[in-house]
Image (cartoon, rainbow, N blue to C red):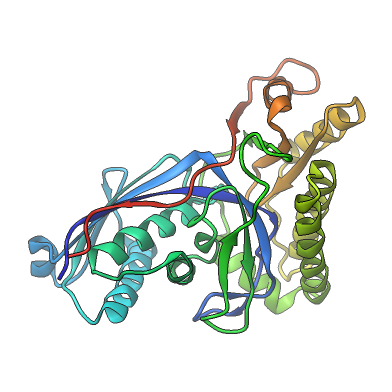
Length: 338
């Protein structure tokens, strides 16, 4: 039996990065990773299975923020729903309606929240009664980092060696008001779609960067060290590792042929400002993903000061868009399993 279902998932930002796959078909990562789910960015997705118009079209139909999805974006949704129907043992074509507060394709984890929400709504709509680990594994097949958006707060994604062993789970310590009490100031320098997709950039880095093997080895070590810092309530130690990990990821991309460079002059300026704030005694650390935008980790008690400083810039004459975020919730799903 099938029934409509709606899910809400929040984007996550990696502190120890996921960059590179060991198996593209199963979306198995080259390394484990650690992330923070944010309350400021979310995707809401409704899946209506056996939709009459979709049945007539002979394919799933989907909209994002009111506009029909086309091309590769629609193909990814359809492939994912095929996987859901395969696990469910059948079912007709669906209508998918999604909205997102995350800029698409800008390195702000829109695919993480999007596919986590699609996994939650799709599984429920087609009658799959999955536990959290099962939902995490399913979401991973749509977009690797989506497996982390199934959970709130700090989350570790175990790289694993096969489909069953590659999943995410929450890490105690990232809750608001806890010992770490983490937050992020997201400096949006360019919300537009990047010229090289994350998938293409990952593939190019894995295949051509001579630095990739070192990246894998060092990131596995970073994850273990970060988990130790979280357990100790050491935000400064966690932040230092996160900033170093992000810089090494981008250095590895620069070693690809042709190089992948998401940074702009504005990106470098923000990195310099974060270092200057830290030197002045305001504890904060930068991290970046596949895009020019910079996320800045800090304590929740310092978030407003960090955001205000970055919005104004070093000379105090800028008006940058800075979005403040705190730890976000886990995936939520509404709609009965029929």
